[in-house]
Length: 159
Image 1 (cartoon, helix red, strand yellow):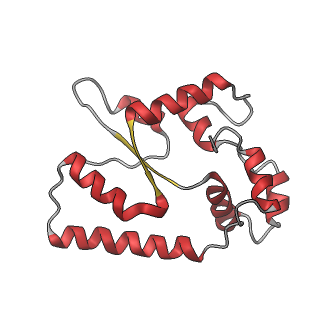
Image 2: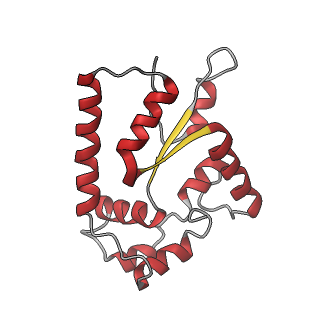
């Protein structure tokens, strides 16, 4: 079986057809974590996280926008959220980043990959390395002022 990785599912419309079927799978972090990751990766040397949240570089509701195919200058609606949630529930296989090893095992069972011990070990190693980095990242504490600022801007994605 083949796997294609893309952060833009609409590009995949041209790849997958009724004859060449595909299945979406998503490994998600909380929207506040996604924004802190983006800030640390791209903007931490140029501004503070508070400045980033107020800047034009901050893209609100990235997941909902991606699934609904709406740009950052277009207003999101309840219909966009409903559509996005429908895509995730009907078309996708959703996992949570903090439970990556369990998710990989569920994927293995669902897709009948039949991973051998070496492949399973590789998946465990990669997931442990990613999880270790995840745990070391200075994410805002849930309920903190910073957390609330991000959640307010991510009102669709947090649902």
